[in-house]
Image (cartoon, rainbow, N blue to C red; front, side):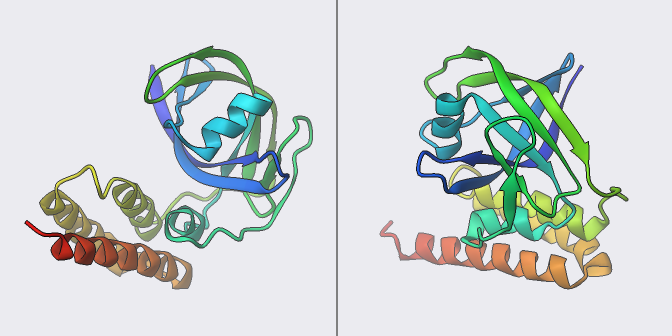
Length: 192
């Protein structure tokens, strides 16, 4: 059975800086599969180093920030692989690529866990945190989904968000909603 882990992928760039990206990582029969789009920084970095780090965090501002230009999150070196991780993550998995299946749109990197550490307990997501992650996924697909669908999803997600959000979730939601509003305004300016 396959399922998807929503997490933050960190990879070092050739210049030593860090690329941080939210991604859904497929898990199937004990293997983790990364499917970055062509072109992307994550793809370039994994292709070069054959490693990546999965970071698990309950700070949903990181998910939102990666899509809205707020990318300055503290990092530190990984323990085993040549890589980096989020300094304040709850846990992280250091991955090594063991196989690759090329594709014109999304190559598949099949990975094994080289090292895994839990730094703090995970007590689950509340409804607002879940809503921010789902809104971040919608924002990443603004150009591919019908605007009616996006609006319907936002209205539904707002119900749980409004009931359970705290300052972190409100900040993240605000960043994402600004991105939605900016995109919608740009669509209205385009000639028919």
